[in-house]
Length: 151
Length: 366
Image 1 (cartoon, each protein chain N blue to C red):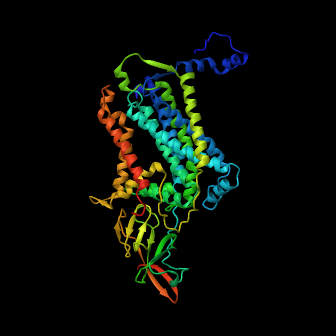
Image 2 (image 1 turned 30 degrees about the horizontal axis):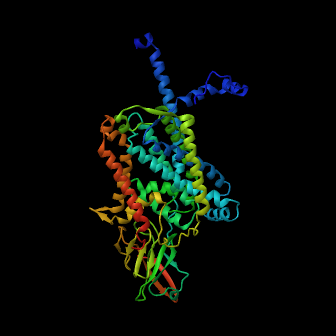
């Protein structure tokens, strides 16, 4: 206590330093917190679409071809196998997100970006993709194609 | 050659000198000297990169007057610029070609500095700021590529923004931050536009200012090999001797740019369609090609880790290695010959050249 009376300077300086640095810190926080929150895009509600009725008629899709369609804001692919069966998968390559396509010449699904191959069950069979494509359920009801998420 | 500083000057010169200190500037310009030796041709690359950057700023400002940064209008505004606006095709072609030449001269500059060991003490900060400028230039290239909103750019951006997404933990957050959402959409285009025309230019001004200040402060580095050989040190004044030579280089660059832009105007391609498959033969800009091609060759899994994670990690470590080379290369720091780092430099150059070559020659469907 006596020390303070003898030499009051350091404690006043300490107080001012503390006061200035916390003020500066609070100021920076008040600037950078809103800016950093601002930079993060708001979370959009995930589309909960469980099924989609395609504009395509079953006859539009020839054997050994594929068509891209929109499923819950993401591309999906409808394939008619050489055997005539309709199958649908997510068209988003599991490697780096490109949109895949059906190649009639090799008879399976292929991604042009990094040469990834998927068989007609969506399984990754060659190239860099690490996982199979998500498979959807295809139902044909009175000349309409309905694609839905597998249960 | 030297101007006699005691000779009488005109009234305007004196008026300006009193206010801005022209005499000090003149003294500074006269003081700067350039070492003369057989490797000095590499000294022109930095100035060439700077010149092309100035071309980028000017042509970019012109493009801003017509470009509209939204998914609905971007492609159409570039189409309008190319087809309707007088010399619109020329301005856009110059911007695109100059960007490519700038990245090229920047790479040559970087590797010449690496091979001539100009990063050694006391120029570490020059090296760091230069590496920062490399990152910024690649950022400019990556963000600018998307702006015309065409098919190739769309998928290149999808892949390019997915790559940081594979980094464990922080990846998905960083990807969202880059894309302005979970997918590449119009929000990404608007965000890339802001990054391309405001954020990167501001950061570049800072890094470039630091870089040029350090170059000015330390002067040109004489390669250690030339220093060790000893003998008489020859120099030439920067102003006007070296500057005039620089100017010849810049004029040649303008001529090359004009020829490239006129004979090979850049194309626009198809408008991006979010519901089309990635086109066959999709490729990124050539300076990302070696990384792109590497990712093609990596299998899905290496030792239980996803191949792409290893690839991304590898390139990250490679970049980090280049960044800290001034601290790793102890032999050069001690003034001894450093064969190892010369060979590492050669190795990196060969890797980039070979993978880039394969990227353009291997059939995309194989």
